[in-house]
Structure formats: C-alpha cells, structure tokens
Amino acid sequence: MKENIVKTKSFAFAVRVVKLYQFLCEQKKEFVLSKQLLRSGTSVGAMVRESEHSESKKDFIHKLAIAQKEINETIYWLELLKETNYLGEEQFSSINADAIELIKLVTSILRTTKNNC
Image 1 (cartoon, rainbow, N blue to C red):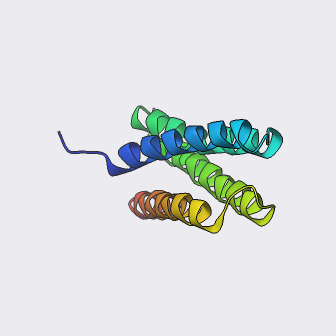
Image 2 (tube, helix red, strand yellow):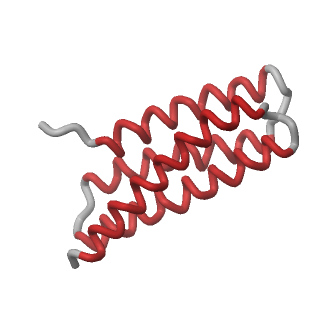
C-alpha cells in the first residue's frame, strides 16, 4: 500500500509537540501556552486520521480544513513561545519548519480535492 505522507508527518509532528510540551512543563515551568500548543499540535494528526474514513468528499474536505486551521493555530503558539523566550531560535526554527511543511501539504490536498469537485 502507498504511504500516506500527511498521515506519517502529522503523527511525527504530534510526537514532537508532546515532547516539546513535556520540556516546557518540566524545564521552563510553563503550563498555559504549552497546553494550547499540545491541543492544537496533536489535533492535526487526529483530523488527518479522521479524514481517512470520511463519509463523503465534503466530509473529507471539512476534516482536512480543520487540520489546516489547527496547524495554523499551532504555528501561532510556537511563534508566541519564541517571542516570550520559552523557545530558543534553534528550537523554534526546527519545529516551525515541520509545521510549515504540514500546512503546505494539507493546503495542497485541499486545493486539489476542491478543484476536482
């Protein structure tokens, strides 16, 4: 079976977000922003997984659109954590690059699917 790149990358991204959450709580004693990051960052993969078993093309588009919104929100929390010095430039750049890659992938799938409707 063909590998689902978005599924694989969104799961790997969720793992990174969970580890970052653990770091922020344990090392930085930051609990509020990190919880927001955890929710939105792990939600992306969950919505991608839900889209695999969508009931219709419209449902598929809806679920991926939610994933797109969640990754966009995650980028916001990452930027905020960087600007408030909870994340260093190197930490931010690495995970943010993954987030940007994910939003591009999801957006591309959404465009293709909508154009084929």
